[in-house]
Amino acid sequence: MTTDPTDLAVRTALPDALRVLTEQWPRDEWEAHPNFEGLVRFWMERHMMFRKIMDLLQQDARSLIDGNMDSKDYAGRLSRFGGMFVNDLHGHHQIEDVHYFPKLSRSEPSVATGFEILDRDHHAIDAELERFVKGANGILQRLDDAKVLRERAGCFEADLTDVAALLDRHLLDEEDLVVPVILKHGPDKLDG
Image (cartoon, rainbow, N blue to C red; front, side, top):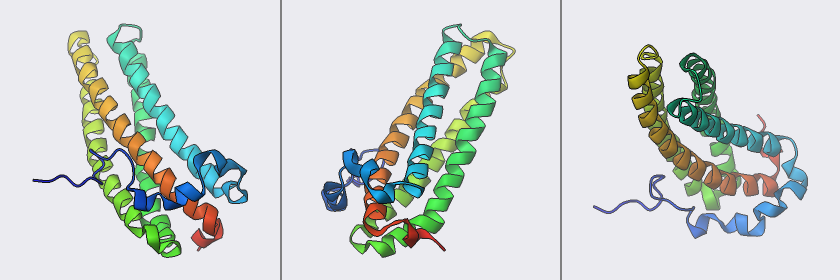
């Protein structure tokens, strides 16, 4: 059985053929481009928010395991930030799949397969989010038993590490594909 090299679980970057626009518009030049302001900046800030929430969830799990956070404080933070992470990420992906990716594919057909890869990523991440929710609920249901709580938090922290790696790979690749297309064609191609 051969593994698809574009699969999120094994991919280390987008294939070179899909990075053509990134070579024309390297990351370190994005913010200086006039088409970066507005939509692209907002979209990049959303990606940064997902990364920050994931970091916070990992730090909180470690603090609970190390005994540096009270279980009730941890439960409140996990409920708040975990719920925000899952709901906002689902909504973000849905908008991309239904609205942005089809329009970006039409704007730049040479990288349309990249948007198909990103759509597949969203399904893979959905499966990870289901595991995330199950793990978080398992923790929240055992706040009364410190030993079980720490064991579950240890498993949850390991799952968070896996989710963080997949999410980061996806976000980096998505940025490398989406941003250059918008810089080239402008954000007005996405209106309507």
